[in-house]
Image (cartoon, rainbow, N blue to C red):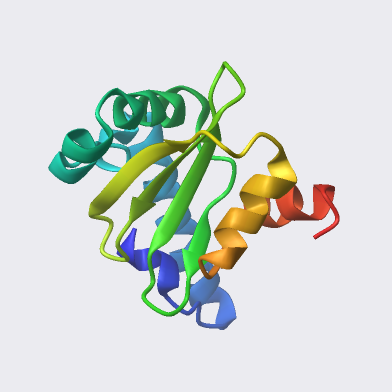
Length: 137
């Protein structure tokens, strides 16, 4: 995950390297994204079963975009559980998991996006940007 903040260089060799890097990331995800979606001790101690449910949701459905807080580089991976609740996993910019939990009070997508924005997170990838634009933010 640390490579996500890298600046892409121009020219043909830069494009080849960027494509190769994307291929490696996709292959790692397809081969079992366990390294990306694993629950840390803090999440288990503080949030228990909810942290496990969020982790499973992310393994089964993938995140609904990636969000980043520029002040510290933390990443957020939201996922909507089968029962409609919103779960979220936070990682440090190094890729190390900080925590994962379910936001019980947030029922609608725009409420959830407001929650992310209020904590300084902005869309980082195209999926997050499309999700945000779908609710007119």
